[in-house]
Amino acid sequence: MSDSTSEQRSPALKNCDMTRLKRLTDFLFEVGMLRHTPRTGYQFLGSGKESVAEHSFRTSIIGFVLAEMAGADSSHTTMMCLFHDVHEARTGDLNYVNKMYCTANGTQALKDATAGTGLSEKVLGLWGELEGAESEESRLAQDADQIDFIMCLKEQMDLGNPYAEKWLQGALKRLRTPQGKELAAQVYATDQSDWWFLGPDSSWWANKNGKDKK
Image (cartoon, rainbow, N blue to C red; front, side):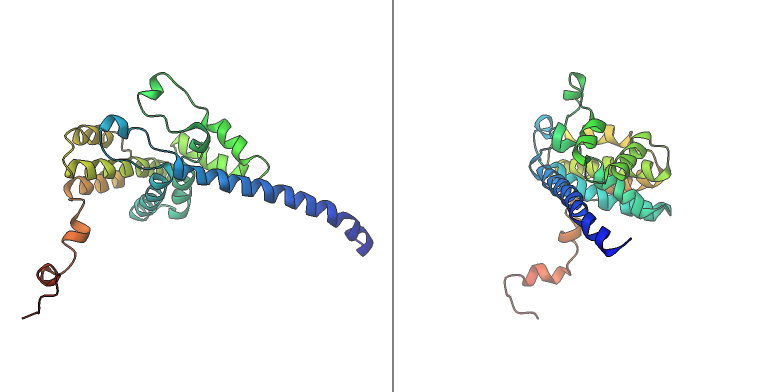
């Protein structure tokens, strides 16, 4: 290609790049809406709250952990977890009561959200694999989604909500993988405050007010 031809085409290429860049920016603003999109089941539980973004973050970490436990592709599992609820920026989160009366087209929401971004094939591929739950990584990602919920329920159970354990027992039955079941069993057996309350040396509690060590 000659320099003159390149110069003639570059403005058009720049326009295409800017169009895609604009859509990528729109998409990132849209993803930010997940910070303001509540998980709606807590209204029935009576305590606790979180956004879809908060849920998606820990779900992604759990997915990574489960994949490492299973010897599966941890990066791929984590990516499925990361994108698993992105469509809820448009549809909102439908809890189990909502779903008896309402439906949401998550696939169409993702298509519209990613249109013009150049991300559609990859994002929709991750979504389709997750929903199909046929690959090991997709089943681990599905379990990660449930285990984050189980951990939230355990937190509420430890804080005294009598309904949380009933919900937790139901969620345990939805787990698909040995690794998910193993991790969830440990979650159930662990007090949610152990990581910080039991973590410091016991002398820390005695000396926390500045009392001289003996």
